[in-house]
Image (cartoon, rainbow, N blue to C red; front, side):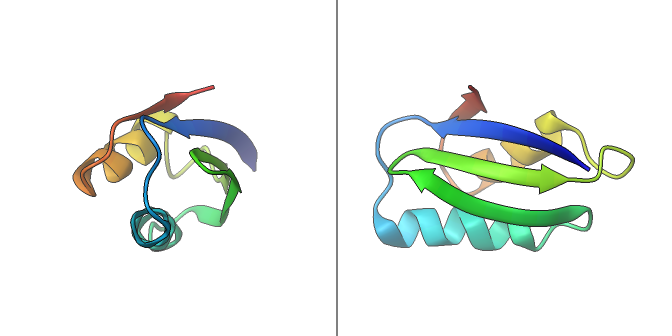
Length: 69
């Protein structure tokens, strides 16, 4: 498993952050996704199933800009 810290542009509302976390947790290959700050996420994922870009793309599909920290 790999871990990546992802920053969300701006500061999502608590509801927005829950939407992002739910979308990430719904991906096959994501073991954990948790908020580590108001606009930061720590995601543990299987690199055989997903790339960091897959994670970022999922966040963008929820309407937020994101990038690796």
